[in-house]
Length: 122
Image (cartoon, rainbow, N blue to C red):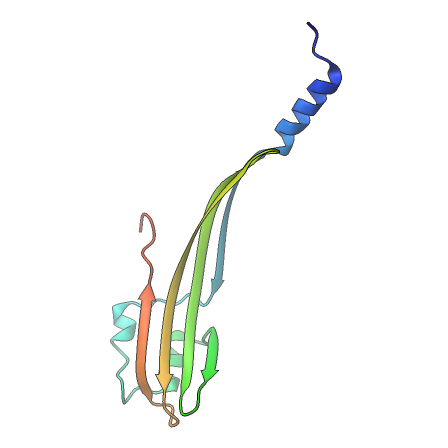
């Protein structure tokens, strides 16, 4: 039984149009929230200028009634997938590092919180 040329072309096109993908995406402000950075900040005496000097510009500045919030966010995503004609599979792992700093109307630090997500292999 001979294989028809049209079928061979369709099979070859299917093989050429399928494949594996890997990707990485990073967005936001990459800053370390390590203990040595946070240890320099003290509620009630550190100022907004101190935080900006240590961490740089935030991802967002939020103005509330009597206080201001500096919000730092870093998103790190990686993944892999398989793209076929009839079946697609993509896995994405996203990690977020966050820090939020609250200041009173005199730009004095009143509270803060940080969070770093553990990464595989790190």
